[in-house]
Length: 94
Image (tube, rainbow, N blue to C red; front, side):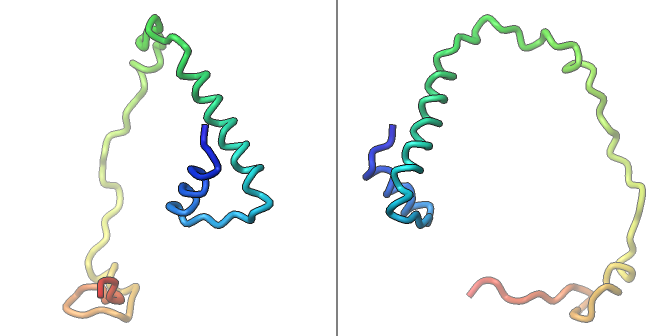
């Protein structure tokens, strides 16, 4: 269970702003989720055989086959912002 202080710290770390009058409601909902998780953690699943579902073994896999090819000139024709046969994009690192 989260205390008010822990809840406010989590909100701060996640950069989530919650109005003061909504904090109690959100804290109660989060604590209900934690209670549900605790209930799930108490379920003994050690006797469940994971191989009991026949569909798991027969799931078809799609072959990775190239069905369409693009040439460099076709791809580069989609932009006016290019240099040395490459896309020009805005600088993202200062």
